[in-house]
Image (cartoon, rainbow, N blue to C red; front, side, top):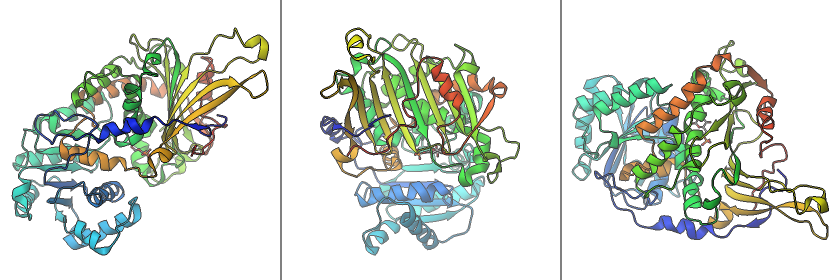
Length: 528
Ligand code: BG6
């Protein structure tokens, strides 16, 4: 895409973002926290991380917690307890977490004393996740923590474990009396949440048997990204785009989440999952719902999530034109030689799908979604492609027809929004595409909190807006199931590493008279 993000700036967004500065109400049991206004200080809490020796804890959770501490967004009293099976002292755990923060945090401790002030709140507890006795011990340990009276029952239990423990841990927590059903105790669950609609339904029921739905925080880390949250502000705090946001003006919607890396050391997990389950079911369907949803009645978590679920309910999977013309799957060259990947693997590392949201607003508008590993660039972007203007006025004069206007919302990296439109070329009588840009970095500086900082704090204050509700997760799986039903009958293409994926995904759009906005002409440069 020529000249992407390299022209003027959109200045309007600073004012929009200020809306998020409004004060939030605290917690808790009412579930009536106004959404997207995360400025309250959480109540004193104890956070227990199950699976504390895993990658997620070191790479994401601990750096996020440290940054929240640095920015004085944690209460005076808090405890972070790592729960895992390996024997370890508190001090050894603190040292490991120090190394993790050093390696992965976006900001380093400014001094030893700053780190020490944070680290004194870190503790370690050795236990088997399926051993009920261990939970009785954990309960005692929580009681004996300094400041435990202030914490009361404000416990967050974070499942950063392998999925086979998602049911076991809540069961043991409940059996040992560590769960309160009034919303004060919170359970944070990572993905993958099931592997299909049936298993997700089963898991929902198993969790809800131990703890109430309003206490369950299902994570999709994409919802913690600033650019994803901005979708709501962009759509519903401006009057110029929303009137155009439907089938009368929009030709198609494209959502790309491209990754530059392969599966790396995660081959064991990935080979059982694949792009459809790993990315499409969760992150990409979430983006789609935010693009397609109706304005919610209010910004409270339930109104917002109701609207997202309605979008999912209107998606009929891939039965409109037949799976073969709506889905492409492929793997990158050499995938079968990756560590812990089966040499006969039929797992996809790339998928592109065409979906339709069958409601009044979107009937007939294709939503093209694609995601893959080892693609040409790391870039996530939404492209709203508007209908082609009629070739009446300028056609005879310029012999070129006007291009479709495109609104591109860059989610990462070089976050920003770009509008591409037609103008008269300087001193020539022909049309030229030009652009207008808004760039996060120029407007707000380089500060960009990590998704997990936002999500952890939201869970602490009891704001479930950016978490997935039980019905949402099932609906998203229902759509995936309808695709997977005929999955094995689809050809498995192979694409070269560092490409934009298989030709067939370009063909899929070409058959509709469209093409991917993001392609080889793409300019990675940030506008600022
Ligand atoms: C995870 C997937 O949920 O998201 C990974 O399991 C993927 O396979 C990652 O790499 C992408 O996240 P981000 O934030 O780097 O775009």
